[in-house]
Every structure is written in structure tokens, then in C-alpha cells.
Image 1 (tube, rainbow, N blue to C red):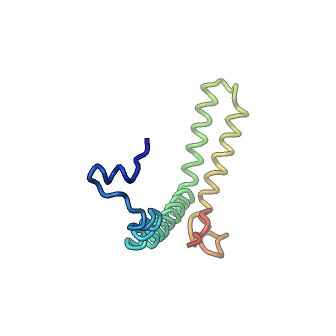
Image 2: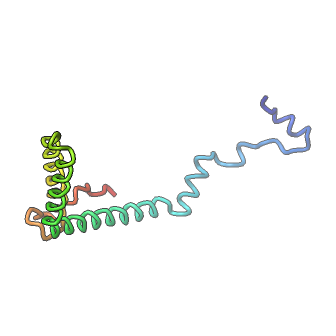
Image 3: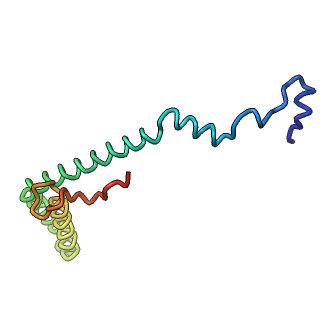
Length: 131
């Protein structure tokens, strides 16, 4: 049941005056402007983008530096699984092994400015922000 504004007066309350306050959307926008929410969000987005780019570059450097160790680990794991399954899944194991090796190579390609195919800057796979 909705309350009639006249009922509020009869109960000793002031009737709601919708013309006294701006609409809720305007109040929210005003507070967002007052606290500079857009500026803070843009700063946060820039900081996060930088952190992601740095993380991807570091992961690429690590993968590049330790590629041989990673490949040996993949070989060891593939051999162990192949032995335990008595060679029944050798084809599937080789497919997974190839996928892992290609993934490591892709990560290693994102190591930063010193990569040979990075003439335009770091290729982190993260698109630049539109901010």
C-alpha cells in the first residue's frame, strides 16, 4: 500500500517534497565529481595496465631464460605419464607436450624491449588503454 502525502501530514510528518532535492542520479553525479571518481578510476586503470605489462614482460624474461629447464621438465613429465599409461596415450601426450612448448615460446616472446621481434616496443599481448 502506498502512502498518500496527505497522510504524512496527518501523522505529524512533513510531506515529501520532490522539488526540494535534485534527482538521485544528479546527486550521485555530483558526489562522483566532488570526489573525482573518474580521475581516480583512470589512475587505477593506468596503474593496473602497467602492472599487467610488467608482469607479462617478467614472465616472458623468465620463460626465455629458463626455456631449456622448462623443456626438460616437460620431457620428464611426458615420459613419466607415458610410462604410467604403458604408452596407451602417447599421441595425446605428444599433442599436450607440443602445446606446452608452444605456450612457453609465446610467453618467452613477450619478454620486453630486448626481444628481436619487438621493434615497436614491448609486445605483451595486452592492448593499449583507450584512456
